Image (tube, rainbow, N blue to C red; front, side):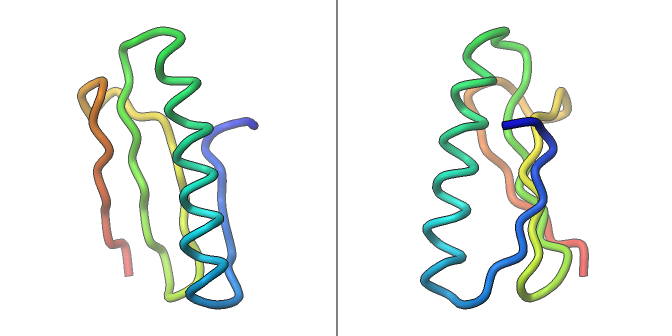
Length: 67
């Protein structure tokens, strides 16, 4: 997977499973260089971005609402 990764989900169940999978993949990438944390941004009710971010300390996942 390439980051940032944008997800558009259909319902609550798919939101949970798709976000869990994207965050797990981001964690694997973050472990490679140990300099970035994970930022999950909600852009709309059904749209999210999962990104590696140097503004988030390594080992942490932060959520942000952008809508």
